[in-house]
Length: 97
Image (tube, rainbow, N blue to C red; front, side, top):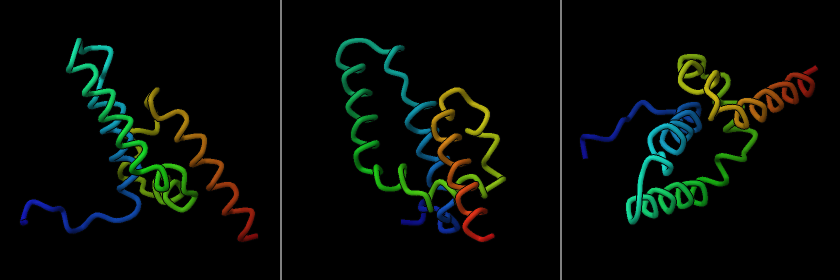
Protein backbone atom coordinates (compact mmCIF):
# COMPACT_ATOMS: atom_id res chain seq x y z
CA UNK A 1 0.00 0.00 0.00
CA UNK A 2 2.71 2.48 0.92
CA UNK A 3 4.95 1.38 -1.95
CA UNK A 4 2.90 3.25 -4.54
CA UNK A 5 4.41 6.45 -5.81
CA UNK A 6 1.90 9.19 -5.11
CA UNK A 7 3.47 12.07 -7.01
CA UNK A 8 3.24 10.56 -10.50
CA UNK A 9 1.57 12.56 -13.22
CA UNK A 10 0.54 12.06 -16.82
CA UNK A 11 4.01 12.98 -18.09
CA UNK A 12 5.59 10.04 -16.23
CA UNK A 13 3.55 7.29 -17.86
CA UNK A 14 4.99 7.16 -21.39
CA UNK A 15 8.67 7.34 -20.33
CA UNK A 16 8.06 4.66 -17.71
CA UNK A 17 6.30 2.36 -20.17
CA UNK A 18 8.99 2.85 -22.81
CA UNK A 19 11.71 1.93 -20.35
CA UNK A 20 9.81 -1.07 -18.98
CA UNK A 21 8.93 -2.43 -22.42
CA UNK A 22 12.15 -1.71 -24.30
CA UNK A 23 14.96 -1.42 -21.78
CA UNK A 24 13.94 -3.87 -19.08
CA UNK A 25 12.58 -6.77 -21.11
CA UNK A 26 14.97 -8.05 -23.79
CA UNK A 27 13.60 -11.20 -25.44
CA UNK A 28 16.72 -11.65 -27.58
CA UNK A 29 18.75 -12.28 -24.40
CA UNK A 30 16.44 -15.03 -23.14
CA UNK A 31 15.77 -18.62 -24.21
CA UNK A 32 12.94 -21.11 -24.04
CA UNK A 33 10.11 -20.42 -21.64
CA UNK A 34 11.72 -17.23 -20.32
CA UNK A 35 11.85 -15.79 -23.83
CA UNK A 36 8.18 -16.65 -24.36
CA UNK A 37 7.31 -15.08 -21.01
CA UNK A 38 9.15 -11.86 -21.86
CA UNK A 39 7.48 -11.68 -25.27
CA UNK A 40 4.04 -12.20 -23.71
CA UNK A 41 4.74 -9.56 -21.05
CA UNK A 42 5.78 -7.02 -23.68
CA UNK A 43 2.74 -7.73 -25.83
CA UNK A 44 0.42 -7.58 -22.82
CA UNK A 45 1.83 -4.22 -21.71
CA UNK A 46 1.46 -2.81 -25.21
CA UNK A 47 -2.14 -4.02 -25.43
CA UNK A 48 -3.04 -2.84 -21.93
CA UNK A 49 -1.56 0.61 -22.43
CA UNK A 50 -2.39 1.00 -26.13
CA UNK A 51 -4.57 4.05 -25.49
CA UNK A 52 -1.86 5.83 -23.53
CA UNK A 53 0.92 4.87 -25.96
CA UNK A 54 -1.04 6.26 -28.92
CA UNK A 55 -2.74 9.21 -27.20
CA UNK A 56 -1.65 12.65 -28.33
CA UNK A 57 -2.22 14.03 -24.85
CA UNK A 58 0.01 11.43 -23.18
CA UNK A 59 2.72 11.82 -25.83
CA UNK A 60 2.65 15.59 -25.49
CA UNK A 61 2.86 15.29 -21.70
CA UNK A 62 5.83 12.95 -22.08
CA UNK A 63 7.80 15.42 -24.18
CA UNK A 64 6.93 18.29 -21.85
CA UNK A 65 8.19 16.27 -18.88
CA UNK A 66 11.76 17.45 -19.40
CA UNK A 67 13.08 15.71 -16.29
CA UNK A 68 12.48 12.32 -17.94
CA UNK A 69 13.63 13.09 -21.50
CA UNK A 70 17.16 11.82 -20.98
CA UNK A 71 15.76 8.37 -20.09
CA UNK A 72 14.13 7.74 -23.48
CA UNK A 73 14.33 10.61 -25.95
CA UNK A 74 17.86 9.92 -27.19
CA UNK A 75 17.62 6.13 -27.05
CA UNK A 76 17.19 3.94 -30.13
CA UNK A 77 14.12 2.28 -28.61
CA UNK A 78 12.54 5.73 -28.14
CA UNK A 79 12.74 6.73 -31.79
CA UNK A 80 9.15 6.00 -32.80
CA UNK A 81 7.80 7.57 -29.61
CA UNK A 82 10.07 10.58 -30.05
CA UNK A 83 8.75 11.29 -33.54
CA UNK A 84 5.12 10.88 -32.47
CA UNK A 85 5.68 13.15 -29.45
CA UNK A 86 7.34 15.83 -31.60
CA UNK A 87 4.46 15.65 -34.08
CA UNK A 88 1.98 16.10 -31.21
CA UNK A 89 3.98 19.05 -29.90
CA UNK A 90 4.05 20.68 -33.33
CA UNK A 91 0.31 20.12 -33.77
CA UNK A 92 -0.40 21.66 -30.36
CA UNK A 93 1.73 24.73 -31.11
CA UNK A 94 0.05 25.23 -34.48
CA UNK A 95 -3.36 24.83 -32.85
CA UNK A 96 -2.57 27.52 -30.27
CA UNK A 97 -1.51 29.99 -32.96
